[in-house]
Image 1 (tube, helix red, strand yellow):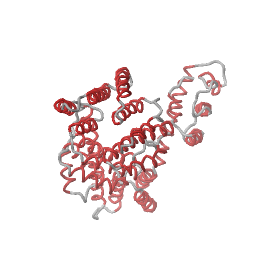
Image 2 (spheres, one colour; image 1 turned 90 degrees about the vertical axis):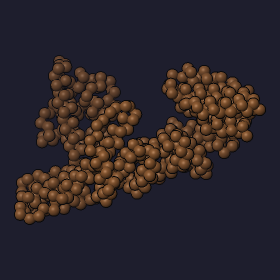
Image 3 (cartoon, helix red, strand yellow; image 1 turned 180 degrees about the horizontal axis):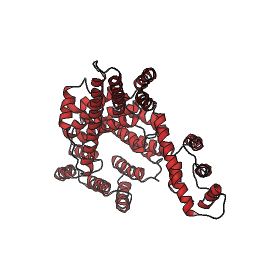
Image 4 (cartoon, one colour; image 1 turned 60 degrees about the horizontal axis):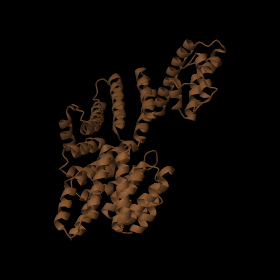
Amino acid sequence: MKEGRIIDVLKTLSNREINRLLKFINSPYFNENKKITALIQFISNFHPTFNSKKLSYKTSYMAVFNSKNYNEKQLWYLMGDAVKLIENFMAIENFTNHEAIYKLTMLQQIDSKNLVPLYTKVHKQVIKEIEATELKDSNHFYLQYRLSETEFKHFINNEKRKFNPSMQKMVDNLDRFYMGEKLKLAVEMLTQQNVFGWEYDVKLIDEILKFTKSNTDNVSHQALIYSAIYNCITNAEEESHFFTLKILLEENSEFFSVNEARQMYVHATNYCIRKFNKGNKPFLAELLELYKAMLEKELAYEDNLLTPWTFKNISGVALRVGDFEWNKSFLENYRNKLSKKYQKTGYNFNMANHQFYIGNFSKAQDYLMRVEFNDTYFNTDSKVLLLKIYYELEELTPLEALSDSFQVYIRRNKQTSEYMKKLYLNFNKFLKRLYSINPRDKKKVMHLKERVEAASPVGDKSWLLQKIDTILR
């Protein structure tokens, strides 16, 4: 059976959700069409893969209509109605799973029926539900606003000539929701503008930034964080914005979902990377501090795992900072956080890099030999590391051979972007000149240094310059 909309939707449901769906479609309140019930029940038997030979349009038709006279048009209409019913189920599940929203809607309906005693009881439940949540993101203040709005309407209907305190609460919560969400979207729009060149018109942003700065006690943590991120992007030279952001994240990241908190930290790490790339070396240590915080707060993971790239980046920064003891501990303690596919290779490559940084070149080569070269990412970087090891060990014959084959490998590799090809080829070109240059000809060595400094992009640029400076000394 070719995959269609109904299977696409059913594939997204867990076993528990499938079981609840079957109860849902059997309820006459939600569905009175027994043919839809029969169709969904039949197709659900093949969950989660839906790739059985017993599942086809004709077998589905027979299961529903108990007829061999296959009518495709009739089946397609029924499938369309079935998908709509499944979509209703998903919407209702999402609604009832958010207890605060569910009870708040219930409270609004109770108030519309003027059931005052019941309103008082459910009102207490809604307050308790909203206050119980640990998250203090824009959704929290939106719920607070909706609650204040309901309280305001209830007060108007029952206490018409008294001061209404819920009106101030309603406006304050609306401001907290609006400004936090507005700044979050402004940051996203600014990021897309910088990356893709897309232009957006963000109205009132200057006024919101000004208000946030002068009213820190009356705005949400979300607004404060995103205003700091916005300032980091638009006024990168003023480093105080970063340190404000760093403190805010340290003190408040637990009030946001894992995904949002992670993205906030990513903005902070990107700022450090940009500053370091412009020559501001202290920000490499700041970057490592952020990585350590993300690990401690469990914000560095994707689907509860470290990607091999994140693992390598964290280790690489620790090595460049010179925090060798922490890096070794990190590699040992977090290797099992890599997916099984990358555990051995990820650990061995980064341990090889660790040994290289502390000057154990032969040991680094030993670890590198254990790396499985079935991944382009590790294959290429392992070759670069081996080139540097050969240079440090003064093994010129294998260095020359690997340098020549590496150049061919990069040029022919279709999986490597043009930018990365240029980065690797420039590294290889300057390495060739470095090992073939006459160290006594200081003029030529100095000229090589100037060329390396001016070139971009160049892989391991700092290492090349370090080796050149050693010759000049």
